[in-house]
Image (cartoon, rainbow, N blue to C red; front, side):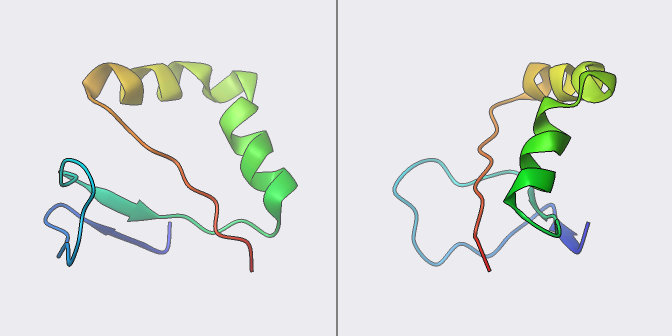
Length: 61
């Protein structure tokens, strides 16, 4: 995780303002997808989704 903020400064939003923002770094798109699809992390992702809505966006370098 490169950064996280429980009160992000939103300059413009098309939908609800997030309660938490986190910036993760991966070496490539495949690694990001592998993180999301890793069966060993399924319980963690389920907890995150149970706790609220989340949006995951990939910004290619």
